[in-house]
Amino acid sequence: MGILQNLLFTICIALRCVTSAVGVIHVTGYVGREVNVSCSYDEGYESYEKYLCKNDCGDSDVLVTTSESRKNKYRIHDDKTARIFTTTISDLHSEDAGKYWCGVTRNGKDIYTEVELKLAQDSCCDTVTKIESYEGFSESIVCPYESRYQNNPKYICRGNRPSTCRQQALITSDNKQNGRFRLDDDKLLGTFTVNISSLTKNDSGSYLCGVQRNSDLDVFSAVELKVKEWCCVKSKTASGTAGYPLTFQCPYPSQHYDNSKFLCKGDHRNNCTNVTSQSRFTVQDDGFSHFFLVIIAELETADAGTYWCGSDSQWRVENYTKVELSVEAVHYAVYAVVPVVLLICVLVIIYKYKCYNVRETEAVMDRNTPKAEDVIDAEEGEIYGNQEFVLTFKQQSALNHFDDPVGDEPDYKNFTTEELYSNENYHKANKR
Ligand SMILES: *[C@@H]1O[C@H](CO)[C@@H](O)[C@H](O)[C@H]1NC(C)=O
Ligand SMILES: *[C@@H]1O[C@H](CO)[C@@H](O)[C@H](O)[C@H]1NC(C)=O
Ligand SMILES: *[C@@H]1O[C@H](CO)[C@@H](O)[C@H](O)[C@H]1NC(C)=O
Ligand SMILES: *[C@@H]1O[C@H](CO)[C@@H](O)[C@H](O)[C@H]1NC(C)=O
Ligand SMILES: *[C@@H]1O[C@H](CO)[C@@H](O)[C@H](O)[C@H]1NC(C)=O
Ligand SMILES: *[C@@H]1O[C@H](CO)[C@@H](O)[C@H](O)[C@H]1NC(C)=O
Image: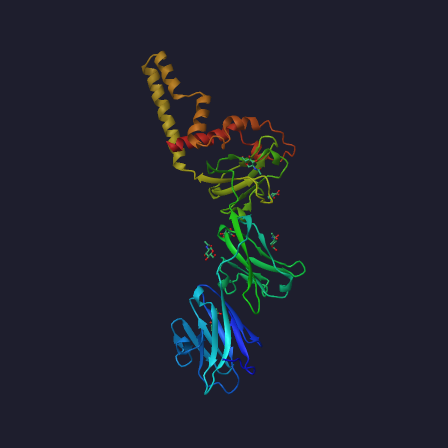
């Protein structure tokens, strides 16, 4: 059972091989995974039988031989060109840890080399660094390492399984950039940094920072990334009719009175387009109302969609408002029907006026022509159902008193209250 000095033994841990001049070779595997035990042999022994055995290496202790290359959870492969035979032990359990022997069968005494198998848990780590970020942002995961690993390859993977981390690496120090991932290794500082851009909620979860080692298991540190939704203050709806003006409010916190206000359109706030450059859109802010007004001069059906407004164009994590705008097309049939109905009404009234006395006629008139105030109340409640959001008749009147230092908003100034009013009345007619 002595160790022959003229034999060199090679052992593979994971995919790496190391030549050991000393007698005992140390191998580490992960519980539940497999491990490769590779032993090299001298020239001349290519055709000899090789085997792996345990304990005292008696006949019953032989686990697998090249004569029967697959037995239970052991597989053996003899690479005669490289003169290395490799035994794979799969489904490792804690009782698999311990002493093994690599053997070469020959006349007289076999050639043996001692192998020590250690097991590690396939999970990591006791301490986890927690990072929080937001959808659409970029975030850097900083992975510190010991200075002696300066020149070792670095990588990062998802999950917390050390055994599969390197195979499933999102990015390694060999390729600095891979899609949304970038890896920078600061060897002086002893940290490598993985920058993930355009974060989505799907990026939330566990990550392992790995440092590849040559003769032992890789070293890991664990990170937990949480990608949060860039939360909205409010989500609102607005509706209008094509061809008519529409105004809605975008609230902002009072401390933002001095910030530039923005409005953009698109399904996703990351890549929505600035619409304020279109002349039909006007943003009006008096700096003290805690909301700014968005005035669309003449709605088009194509204006329907999702709008985002806020008071920080840097898209930092601040309050913002999402607006779902729907636009009703103009139904020309209504234009035809309304005058006809009005005409019939007038004829009926004239007819009744002729048939009944004056007192009765007054009563009819009262029912059919509501006072202006009644109409406004009805609009606020019934038509939009979202009172604070819609500029009412009253608010619009007040706006006309706003100072307009630039004086370049003819679109807005030209909206008479009657026009807004008629748009809203139109809705009312349409709803019926
Ligand atoms: C063991 O070696 C085989 C064949 O080279 C390889 O496919 C497998 O990935 C290795 N397993 C481990 C855990 O390194
Ligand atoms: C990540 O990389 C992008 C692009 O190079 C950069 O703009 C961003 O500031 C970086 N993020 C962090 C958190 O370092
Ligand atoms: C989320 O990420 C996983 C990988 O972590 C990927 O397999 C999956 O397709 C992603 N899902 C979406 C909706 O992007
Ligand atoms: C806008 O961003 C979202 C999510 O980031 C993406 O799904 C969509 O394809 C993007 N649209 C365009 C036009 O780039
Ligand atoms: C949007 O466009 C307008 C007009 O071109 C410009 O004044 C404003 O700064 C732009 N807003 C953003 C957030 O880019
Ligand atoms: C967001 O909105 C809430 C409620 O409207 C307000 O209390 C808070 O100050 C706002 N946050 C920021 C950063 O403006």
